[in-house]
Image (cartoon, rainbow, N blue to C red):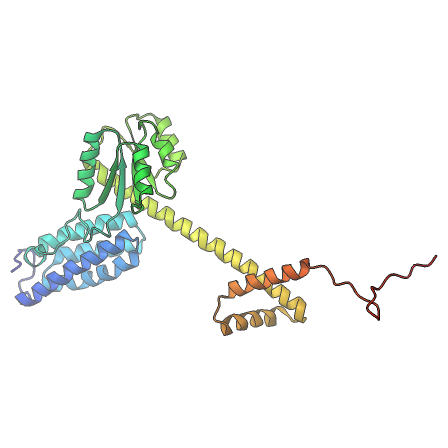
Length: 325
């Protein structure tokens, strides 16, 4: 039984409490997975459910933490949602220790190793590398390690999954962390450095780093910094994806407009009828409108590039111009 003096005096039966504990663990796993994907609506829905039902089962701390998490999701606060979810896990362990203990997600853990972010650590200090690796893995993150830039690149080119974040020492042997970062093709990165000078921090920011830590590093400060960098990297990825969608929409709109113009000129119809003709052809052939538009424009360009046929006089002889002397 789950006994706590802060709960209501009239509680549901043990079976219902056990069922709620199991459901609570399941919700926390789902929310953790959704949060790692950056899916805040996927976190908000179960948080809203828990905020309303937890008090019924005597889990007031769970209800309060779920309400806080729901508010962070509504505000689109990714970093705040991560912290709120950690507090919700703590509240779940406090409110439902028996029913939740067998399958609870600890505040610093993730429910599935396959879904946990993968972090690439690169530092030539083997002792520090081991400490940082242990710190991140104890929080449920997956970790790859390398002692220099060449080894890190070899890992990435050997078919390893792409990390969600690279944590790079700037002063690496052979290849600096700044040089390595330039070769990380789409992998967000943050830097470690023993140099606390502002010029190094400015250089890191200018080359696109999502975070910066100064050595000696307190392992307790590493996890919040990595989580903040992951959140920032996710925001950048979302912005890039939105930019790509906008670029694609503009390009498709331009190509569709050109195809409509071709049809207007060929059939002497207005824009509305030309667009309707284009859409009807795409639907009847179960093809994307833009694909049909591209082909139509390309066909028109080929036609326009062909030389005009030479006209022939009666009898099959080439027609020549009448030149008067």
